[in-house]
Length: 226
Ligand SMILES: Cc1cc2nc3c(=O)[nH]c(=O)nc-3n(C[C@H](O)[C@H](O)[C@H](O)COP(=O)(O)O)c2cc1C
Image 1 (spheres, helix red, strand yellow):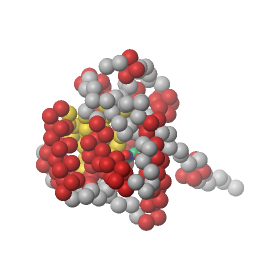
Image 2 (cartoon, rainbow, N blue to C red; image 1 turned 30 degrees about the horizontal axis):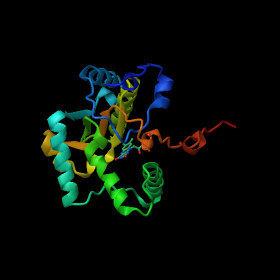
Image 3 (cartoon, rainbow, N blue to C red; image 1 turned 180 degrees about the vertical axis):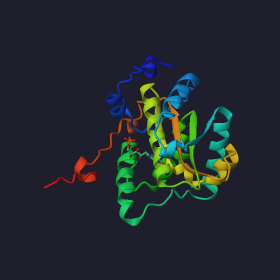
Image 4 (cartoon, protein in one colour; image 1 turned 120 degrees about the vertical axis):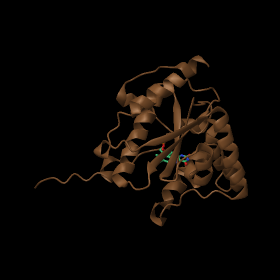
């Protein structure tokens, strides 16, 4: 591991929130188990509806991770992946993000083959040595899904603060049966997404991509008294 990877483990919350970004190419360097456990135990602090703590993670590394990857890639080749579809009015977000992400990888809009190869890397976890599958009990609802989201963000921040990169991957939910079988996930748990975890390859231009956020007013209405 290089010094760059060992870089600052800082615990300044605001800086950590701003530093976290999706990593789409990882070094194969293993993730120290102690760091992973620290971030996982921090994430347990997340709030949840009725303190249900409804998050369930199934983490694969080493041979189990390799086997999962092989099974997913084999299935991708057999049946082209269908990433969970977005409703019509939201589709443009995925297109705009895709243009930015693939553009930063040097793939032209009309290069269908290049794009397909890049998309396929989702199911290799972008080279991450660790992949977590995030699940929720099928009988729980939106507030519980939100609790899982709060947990995942806490986890991502805990990883960021420890110098680790991550990428949430709804794309993994495209093949729930394969993941279920490989990792022994019981039928009552719904697979929401994956999280790829490892050291970010900062030489990969797409890892330096910073996608914009809307201004607060776009998402928040402050209803003043008058
Ligand atoms: C629930 C969830 C699912 C996501 N799924 C994918 C995915 O399948 N593939 C991918 O490349 N990025 C995925 N992302 C990453 C988003 O594209 C990314 O968070 C967003 O564009 C903002 O960029 P940033 O994370 O770099 O700040 C996902 C993010 C979330 C929160």
